[in-house]
Figure 1 (tube, rainbow, N blue to C red):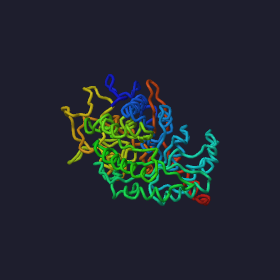
Figure 2 (figure 1 turned 135 degrees about the vertical axis):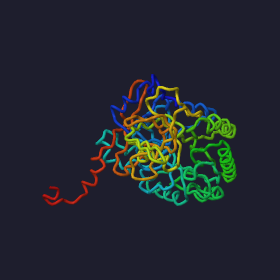
Figure 3 (figure 1 turned 120 degrees about the vertical axis):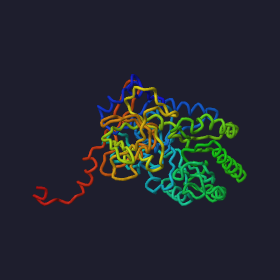
Figure 4 (figure 1 turned 30 degrees about the vertical axis):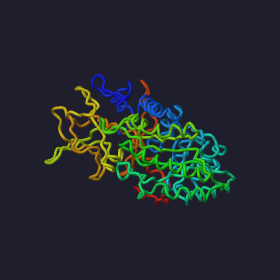
Length: 458
């Protein structure tokens, strides 16, 4: 839980007490530690240093522009999977050459904007909020191609624009990452990538096309991947393809290994990032010395344990079967428990006992509770049967390891506004996204309503 610690019985983000943040901006609120983000980025960078990898932050993990700018300042490029994320990466100050555009369903509109800034949806609106004109920004550094249909669209648009798009083909290696079925992406029954046995012929069909240049291979087998060996299995498939392609005269310049690097939501449940690097680096070191560029797309491994969700207890309900701790943050704020049955350690912000860490040895006096939210769904929960110390109406709870896929998956279900976001750096706390107000939710619909007869609302 680097970046978060109990000091004098109160949980702090860096040196900022969380009760003070809750008083200032309300709850539910996502709180991120800049020091933890920097440390996680440097740790990943150092682990894979022998490969001199190009790190491309996976924006889908946590897309706030200020977080993207923080990472861009550390040297990260950006991995995007939609036209919206493409514009975020660019607005964060990322050079287009440092952006990798992945995603299985790219539209012609998104492809065109990725190759020519004049097609950006911000071309007209950018000046209104102080952004530069995207018209001359150039094409993305790499398009990761998911299907031959998509490849044909890229080539056609490239020819129309007079641009030869740089592309890598995403390979489906049919490797089991041993993770949740919803986040498994490298098996033959998944929608992602092109089967490995089709790759060589695909390169042959598109060799020399003036609209697209195939110069790389991409793989992403899932997230989070709790074992090291599936990466080695996927790399073996890719290395065989590199050699087969070379025999046909196709040189692979870029190998994008994707992301999926795990973090411990419970202490010791996954190997450290260094274990993955120790296995992977020797497999690719010689190819890197011969000129191969390796890209990594970290997201969760940087942001998950660098952020938490701050939520306030609204009510305590003691029934015959269970005790419910009802909070203002639920599945609308943090969807992962409801969607994946994911575990997130949570604990009161005010705690005078020993540092609870991960509660490997349960403390005495705890009561099993269902920690739930305000949403009108039985599946709305943050934790079930979780041992907690006594908590009361008005108490603050911290839901840890929520920095990745927390805010990015938040919802407006039941007309709840999306949470606020705060970035803490040392002793400074900055609101980087205000809480979404009800009027912001209703405004587009009110603007679309027909005129209401006079007196109808009397």
